[in-house]
View 1 (cartoon, helix red, strand yellow):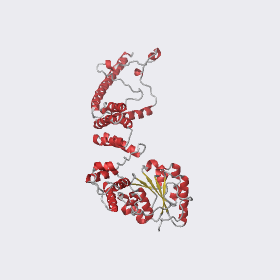
View 2 (cartoon, helix red, strand yellow; view 1 turned 90 degrees about the vertical axis):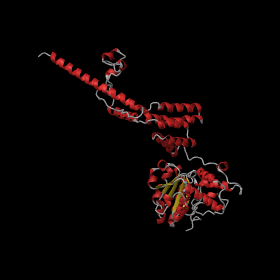
View 3 (cartoon, helix red, strand yellow; view 1 turned 180 degrees about the vertical axis):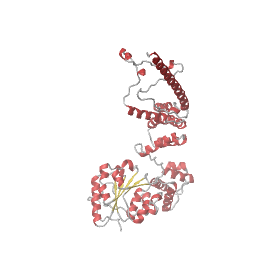
View 4 (tube, helix red, strand yellow; view 1 turned 45 degrees about the horizontal axis):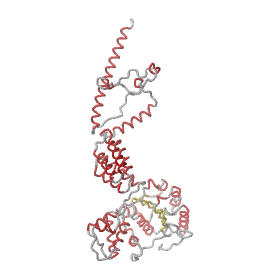
Length: 473
């Protein structure tokens, strides 16, 4: 069935903002040079889509749906320029559905109602509708909820496109009625295929050296649309000129801005990669992810704060100087700013990545916190409570306290836990770095504490025996 003309109008008063029409599946005219190159080279079948074989191959999830000519509602999640819109258009054609595109950026609930009303009318004539919603994550929860009954009863097959993690941006009810498919950024081979198609369409090769061609592919950063836009700029240059080298290429076209949003998933993915690289003692990977964050425009002070947290959580007592290094980097950046201050942050990253690691304090504090919640409001033992008044002294506050630095071993061995609680072990040092020495000190103090307890037990037993001897027979 030909869907180049709408059987029924999508909107009562013509297409709404963000829509290109009710069933815009018109095949682009590749010879129409007034249209952008990316549009002229838009694939005309699913077989022509590059880089998404894991979804579109015959035995892949979407490929099997197409073979059965039975589509389910889905969310296409992937970076810009990976083919989400094209795939949706081709799925509509393959399943003989009217393609109804809508942009969440410009549309609201009223537009959705018109779409659903038109889809219901088509359904009475035996015609299905594929509703494609670009940037579906921009719809709020109420707008997303409006899809539910129409998706559930099959009035529309919903295909949403998003660059953001659906787990965070889409509500659970909508996700439970849809399948999420992850599209990949285009690899070098896929981008080379697109470049070759552009050359074939124009009838001439790109005037680039081998090094410049590799640079062009790298500059696209996995975005097929951006690659074709750069090629279109190059094809507009006068013919017959010498091939451009990498430097000349950079003067003619602009590199794609990094895919990085400080408020979205990419932000958290990269800080996680940095954190785990430092935890894994890999300074090279850590520097790479740090550079990626800075190149994407991340606030260096955000990174500095995370380094301080890492120094406490992941290095801890294995190297107590780590937190000072992290704080120093923070201070240097605040004094120098960018770009000089970024080097101090990079130095702190290398220090933390190469420092010995221990989470013994982190775990110990967590265990102590759980114990504190469990034991409630137990009173400290009286010997470690101050006695600023005479009454408190008479009640025994501070009685028997020993000042450890004045004891022969510099350690009194006193018990500092609540009397009714008993002693617990929370901090268990590792053998890493400085903490190994801490462990040896603790072993010595535990030995002295045990000796003191044994001595106190013998003294108590001797005193009890003496008291018994003095009792009258």
